[in-house]
Image (cartoon, rainbow, N blue to C red; front, top):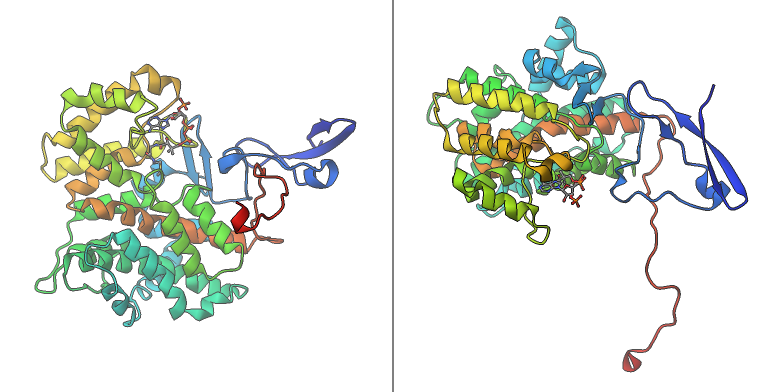
Length: 428
Ligand code: ACO
């Protein structure tokens, strides 16, 4: 029997269908509200609103569960290559061996950038933040692939998706190379996705780059852990921009902009800056006192999440990976890692964080791993954008392919002046 929710305002009552998904909470379909009761719902920040149907990612924030197309994140991070995860997110199933081979070939043959795109990099200051370069250059791709603008053609959508996912490592690595004043390194068809990124990021024209399997495994895992996270701020931005029918390259540029903020993708960079600022274990209590003082504006970066009110499952894997990478790189007693672990322990037993269910999120440890790998702080968020491009593109494609897809257009509760009369300037 169809479950319903009933809302009454004065004499009028309306019944609204309660819809169940495969997993997770039911939702109330409130679309009848304005027509039947002349009201909207009010949900600033959309924390309690399901903005779409999706089959891609499931999160249970209370239990700390994250599934991609039904597969637990832990299993994917342990056993899959990033290319398998791309295929899974885009197409809904893990690839067979034959599909995998052909998909990898398709991806690798789209990694090159149009040679004119090289010129775009020269337009940026050398000290530009790589996220600024990423945002501008990915947006500029829309000028190179106007065919992608006709998103009603399935083949165009597929090609745009592949181009975005295949080219983003090249753009990200070149953004870094540009800020270093080093020559761009071209992608290599004999390397996998993670290896190619490392080769373009750390390789030099003057010598052959040797792939370190420890580093490429760690990058592979970091990419998987950041690949998608349902309707977060940047993904919702991509969907919102995409809902107007805009070019997908421009939509992903919008997602990159949304990811940049310290409350979202910029947090990994902020964690490292915070740890450096704290400096030593003895300073933890005074730092946490600042965090708890609402007037200070200081937050414990890498802690808290809009959805997870329990451990972020990605943070657990990241913590384990962090120890593995440091051990394999021969880094013993890393002072930042020691400080991070102590900070985590103190915060997890502090009433302020316990009461508010604030746990470490994925970014608490990712910065330490990236730093150990020699990736500079300014590249942390670009690396996140690189990984999340797969999620953005999969979510964008799912939205466009949804029957009856409409433009996203939230409403508001207006709290400004009621209508008033214009006053000429000399009388104000
Ligand atoms: N440090 C201190 N206090 C915090 C923190 C934090 N990191 N996070 C939340 N709080 C407090 C809030 O001030 C609030 O306190 P109050 O109830 O006394 O007013 C309470 O905890 C509840 O927080 P919410 O309002 O539910 O948090 P919200 O969902 O709005 O924000 C967010 C989530 C933005 C991630 C926040 O926790 C934060 O800023 N964390 C630090 C930045 C960070 O690590 N971001 C990465 C997120 S994960 C990602 O994007 C991959």
